[in-house]
Length: 142
Picture: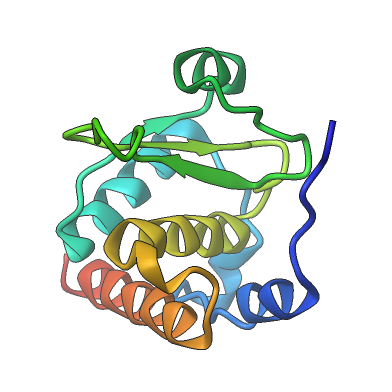
């Protein structure tokens, strides 16, 4: 079995994403209620609804895709010939222990829903940062 590891450039771009949370909130732990609220904010600003999944075995069973233990998150849009009307986004709670890590994962995967053809190019991460900034503004205005 081949295990895909992130390219160092992709990893660096992901790590460079700036979380909009106040510094004192970034290290707070992620609970499911917070993650669900935050996911709804990303879906709202991106105008791309998705179902949040944290049961990784169920996700793998439904999608037929392996969810490797080093994955923080992954989206599934369905096969090219039969896209889901609402994609699935799986988040590995064991790898997004802090809210900052969760924000980065949500932004990264939401970016793939917004501009799937961008892959992991710099422009894709610019879009992910825009999503983070918009969620930050949404949180401030709420």
